[in-house]
Amino acid sequence: MWSIAQSSITLFFQGKLFADPRMVFIQLAIGILVTVVVMVAAAKLGAPLPLAALIAGLVGGVLQPFLFRRLKYQ
Image 1 (tube, one colour):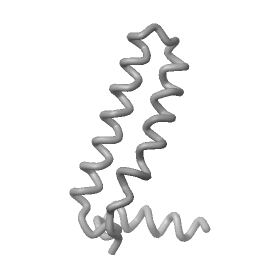
Image 2 (cartoon, rainbow, N blue to C red):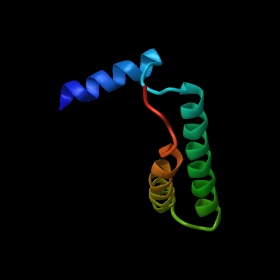
Image 3 (cartoon, rainbow, N blue to C red):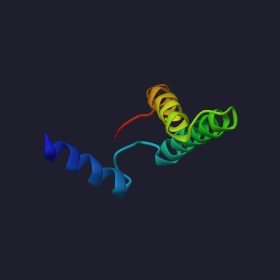
Image 4 (tube, helix red, strand yellow):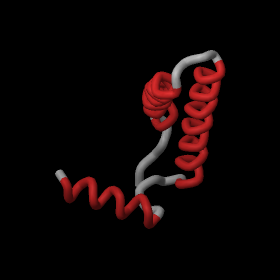
């Protein structure tokens, strides 16, 4: 199990895991941006910082599979 994860990490940083690495970074940036916006909005609405972080993390985590579903591996 660890060797599979290690191999995937190595291929990712070599730029050989995904067919279009540019699209991976775009989708990742979209997920990060949405998470930050949700956290700031929740904090501005008066949620305590830990709760705002929890909500933002949940939204960002749920969003990632939808963003990454169209990515192609090599």
